Length: 265
Image 1 (tube, rainbow, N blue to C red):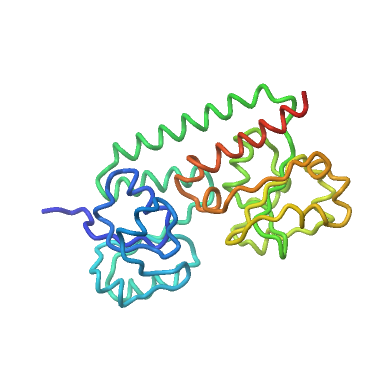
Image 2: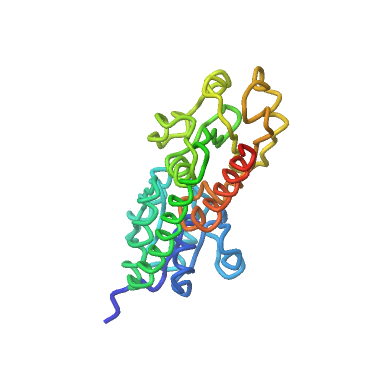
């Protein structure tokens, strides 16, 4: 008797990406329309949900034996599916360690624990190498990570942790603990008071516009603006808490901080 799920619906891109990396993509029968990585999934798999909404009947027609979701924002979708008799596992990874644990759990759910552990080891090695390389920095730059511009929202926990791993100091470490973006709203004056050396924009769903940031009142005196240290990391590379934060987000953070470091010499 096969006790492993054979028909999985992924309501967000993170668990889907893990399943592809584990070579278990044949189990996936439905995905989110916001899926970004791997790109082939958008061609191979039917789209059954957005982020906070889903086509429940379409999901049920796929006869899933497991649905994977993310966060309290998908609680209503999960509740409807549970009422319909579907098994649902909703992850809530909010830190680097949480992301690694999510990978391990997905591996266990599909009987690919060894492959999941190997993937985690790869990412942990990458993290350790990044931490070791920070010892050569002249100092750790203060990094303001902007998740949204109107209102201004600073970095979510895993992004702040990745900044630290890459060698920077998060501009608002006291706010990283808050899950809700509304609890991480900051003012231009608050950012200016922290005098960041680097500004990174990752405006979810739209292109970062450094010229608008440069024009904020008083920011011409900020080291990041004076030294033209404004960068974009696309939200799909760092704001989706899955493997992409290691394969795409962390290397970009390292490159940005390295560029800043070279200007200090």
